[in-house]
Image (cartoon, rainbow, N blue to C red; front, side, top):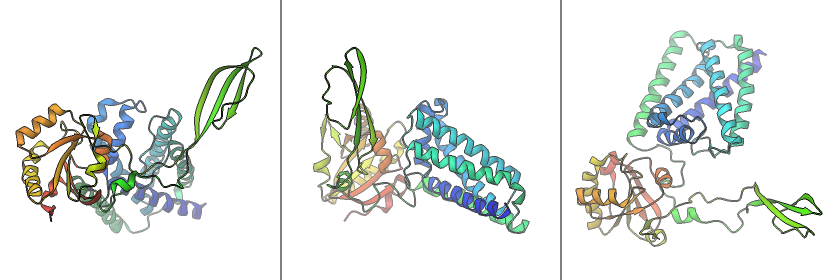
Length: 365
């Protein structure tokens, strides 16, 4: 039992650290996921939505620190009970989300590893079993180093977490796991390979045959039945290929200009998913930056999910030299974790992407 607990303890600790670090790298993205849990009937706690970012930071730091504490063997009783409480809560959350199809991706590993709701629940069940092993054999958890070294490592880990999250909040994620990272081509990301797997559906046809209701199951073909058709139920039994970039449009007055704009050799995108939540003071500096881009031969566009009243007012107030287009809010949140943020593209390929705190890093050639 001693050796089993030792191995499981290290494995679970590393898993918590990795999971926490991935979310620590992108706390804004994790906060968007928490907003889904708060507002889509999973937790049904919409009043927490304004505090989603603060909660996301707290949760991921706790996740990393619990993993560190488990490996180091610090305060085993508190550590094990915290682990147990967290995994029970998340197991309930992923089951509820999967069973009622509330949130399609748990966000457990951020954008690095996408898990379906049932995959997330299965993962939590496995973790629950492992943590129960640790709980049963908790007496075998002993410190790996002396108390002075242990405290140094713990304080160092906490300070590293705080410093790292401060950096990514004021700039951008150090590691970009999304399909809009620098070097990726947006148009290529929207394409589907010819050999990509297709979605498979199951159809349950209901017929009235001689006064009895009978069900015929097919993969799409209308069954040959000597009876009266009643209804059909369709369910997806195997998901097809989904391009990494989807729901990407750049609309103005109902027309999508994405295809033509993505062919521009020099394109600057000013992205502000919601102007009500944007740092509007930054647009004074964006005015200077975009004017420089325009003089250098770049086409500049704004992209927002806000209405024309808000975008027109912003343009007029800051005397911006470009027009705004409409793009889905979720898509804009995915493109850049800054509100506003700026991208520089060459025929659809992302060459530069910056937080509004790093506008001075932009280079227009």
